[in-house]
Image (cartoon, rainbow, N blue to C red; front, top):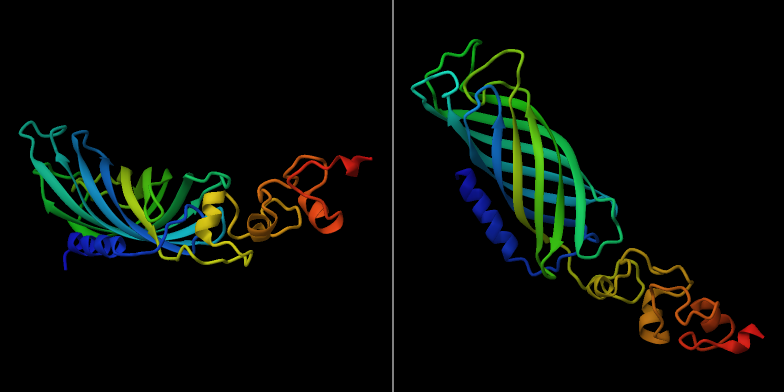
Length: 279
């Protein structure tokens, strides 16, 4: 099966999932990307090319996640810089990479900026050759290590879909991608991507056992991994369902006593300022 067909199958598979997307509180998620790429090498006549990529992402914490991806693409251009007759060349690439994603802004609900870096291996195959002679020996196919880094932004589209925008750079430890090698240089490419991400965890789970599902907590802005988001001593579920207080504020009525003190100790109404407590 060709790589582009495999990526199409993965895309259809993800679209068929009925799970609900979470911006940050998930265990496993996956998706597909389309990237425009630009080779950075010896020639200066390069064309915008493409790289399709499928990936699976596993959360380690609210800030850190790991990602495994495989892609298929083509980079192309001409040898016009060194050849007045200008001949086209094309190289197919299949990168496999592992990334660490860092998303430091934990209070955002509908967007999730992140940084990433990682490494992997690249399979390349020159499928169309130009006619300019290479100064150093050059291979038309092979494998090469790679390192990469970049940044991105997740944007919540719905409960089941996240839009992923990214830009980055991949440095390869080969100088063969444009079938022209100067020993002291290595080839790299920039990429600008857009993708769709889907999570594999149901929305109705309650990981922190506070009585509220992930869907409800995401709508409220509370933390699905913390049973007491505001730290007032009352579980989020109790505040929402029983006391009707704000699970994001320790002192809902602003009278100087937190919700726990009013509900458990003083037995007063935490939603109405109680002046008697100040006497």
